[in-house]
Image (cartoon, rainbow, N blue to C red):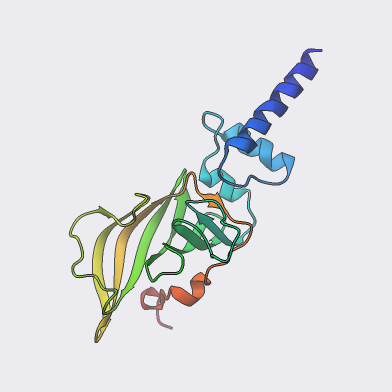
Length: 193
């Protein structure tokens, strides 16, 4: 009888975790049990959840899928995942307000570097000399900004340190925003052959 009680208790915990999480959980029970076993306080980290996803393109936003004509709600992170390396952009759908990001996930954070293109009307008057929070949600902090390329009124600014807090984002069923490869050109930082 004790084994049945333990089984139903585990099932109840899993049900609670599935209902209380803002992120869509792994779809197979082995992945689910593995994520639960490594979880802190019963809540897996984003690193654990992302490891359970196949490599590919994803969209996570600060608000649930609006299920209408919009590409996303709130601030969204559209990225390509390869193991725990993410490359994409974070910003506001249907606007020019976004920051390209690439880096590694550890715990609930993406840490790496950022890139922004600045132009007249959408420009940066000055780059803050110290770490600052970029978004209204308080999730993305940038530091060590430097203009790396400038062509007339268009400049590219790279941030040597970028940190994005991923916990609590909603995973959308599919990525509906523009592909990160179309918006983020990191070629300035690639070795020339």
